[in-house]
Length: 507
Image (cartoon, rainbow, N blue to C red):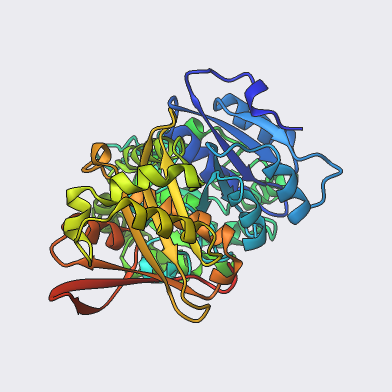
């Protein structure tokens, strides 16, 4: 049983739990990008990898990179039984990273119900329906792709490229060693052995190039590959199960790269040179299209018929575009996102009780709140107390309070539903001491995440807020949470912006 508090990591580091798998059948791509993320966040965070298949070489790779490794109990079935087991180990302050196509919305919901933050590494395969943060490093993907993922903070594109630190060490100039070198790698596992299929063709087409062939820890055909390379003759070097530093060193000595449109393609682009991408799985198509359309790479089918003497010019041309998109700042961006997320997870959300009536009364009559209210008149205590009691007993009213770790109230959110067919109406406010600190977004996101759990009828439904057009701070909160602006309304001779957020049916 996983017991995070008992694990031997530094007490000065916050824990991240990575649920990811890697094997000869599933490949290593998901694990490698998780490792890259974990390394980008060191030393502020200690990463714990939870694996179902604990291959020894993979465990060793993670441990050498400073990670801890745990395994899912063998008796725990995959899917919802596993999610139930994992949820039982979590605290509301935890951050869980999910990377895999088998973490369904139902799996995610069980984890979200603990209050833990979910960071989903995504490539548009399994909907990250309950994500707090969606991280999709593929280019060409914009917010509309996640219209069915309400409230999630979106980190999209190469600006958040999940590259291990070794691959940000750019060389000032292109490598000039003779003979020129061509790098070949078809992923960490390469289950269909594309490496062996491509090697003879590359040897024939580019005879003056030294071929640098790298296979991963999960590649099962190494002995046969050695026999193939020996039979082909020419200058071919084989490398198996390289460390990140060793792999980066090999890349920096190559001018041409042949690889799938996956994480290794980003490593090649970050290094710089002529990248020829070979599609090996349908889930790579979006990244393939992005790389080709943005002139960061060529399809291998196009590049493999080019004359040798054109490759140097192609490498120089692509290197200019690659430098523009892979700027070396992804690690800093990721650190900022996770630092904010860790702070936000320290806040606690709860339902209001009758003992909070006086607090709500004070906040409701705050001058700034009354100024932005539809009905700005002060509220009498008797009126407030009767209203508050009715709301607490109304099954279609949800009153939430957000607290600091010390228990100090930050603000309140109220959502009321007139009927299942109509959007719920949002009212929220921050305590005066916590305004101007960017906490409005945190308050509303946490309350609405809890509402999804508390109100199953919200699936397929919506909520909306009305904001006085002059209230710029509140307008920004709704925009940042990706509410969709509706037609404005006029109430009490004041113009109000209207924002709506829809929730997916599979919620």
